[in-house]
Image 1 (cartoon, rainbow, N blue to C red):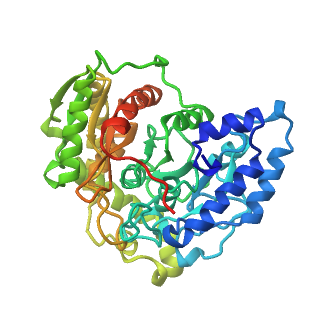
Image 2 (image 1 turned 120 degrees about the vertical axis):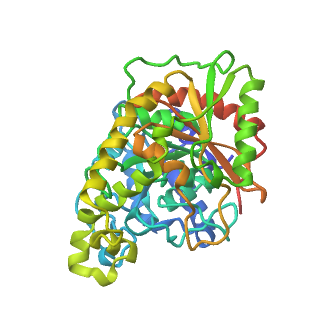
Image 3 (image 1 turned 45 degrees about the vertical axis):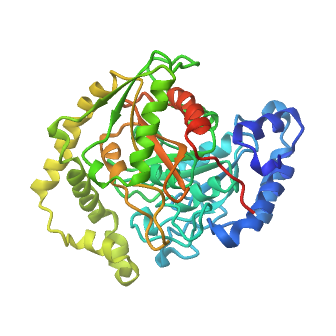
Length: 440
């Protein structure tokens, strides 16, 4: 196995025992990127010389002073400030802009010893569904999803073991599914958003991509994600209870997702779990509408400054936010805020009865074309409810492309969810019918 194919956990083991240096690891990743960049185009900015400079600095650190992520490479979504690299938001307004500071999340990663590879592509301000240049590594005629397009594609194509994303609607979970990798959206407000362009204060959440749950556990350790009651390290599917929840979005599900949810539930039953299909109470039915209202009304102040200085360079959808083109009243805005807030403890109560809720990640496999990044409708409700979510790979659609399924837990049960995801992921990846490949 080439070094670039290692998961973060596998790379860390070799970096710790001295069988691999950070520089050797970095050069392997850079060679992989050079081989595949013309096809996938996951990067908004990458400077190989700077990557090697970081790698040499990390190799020079004495073993006893090395951090918990020593040498692990990370792709950073290009809405997060990174010193020594531009942060451009895929916007002509910020082309070539280089803030001279790191976002709080990047400071934490650097302190842990991570190797910052470069800036991965995003849709404009991580807001719209018009795709960036990035292609799906499993079929370059299709979208990798968005808005965290580059991070997900880079991880799915073995160009990085860890990718940073964000989610306001479905910008972590959807691309995770489309690229056949693990995606993790923690409980809202678990990780500082200081130093990134925030779309919505009550929706935006930093998320992560990886090719293993062990890697997500590494990241959770670094960002000190903790439950009140630590979960057992070895979660057993046998004897556990899961809910299957199609949600009010189910009429939009395509054949790949319909088949995946059925297969996922069957696999859990086959491995000894009790699986119960449930429905949300009617009071949840307006969640998609309320999420949309929050998104549009929070976008009004968020993009006002760009609107003032460069309206002609701003995406029409963002102009509409500022101008309140949809004519959302303040009363409707308050209703959306308050109704969503009232439902959060109720979903916690429902989810607490199960090891996790199994639910769709996406409408279907990645749609054809790269002009748009696909629909986030299955993700938005969980973003609004602030619950932690993982997307688990293992299934495929009618064209053989990956389709993930999501697991949901109550708020601030992130470590519990990751332990459940580890056990579920082992089954889905082994028996779900889709296998990850290394493309050349």
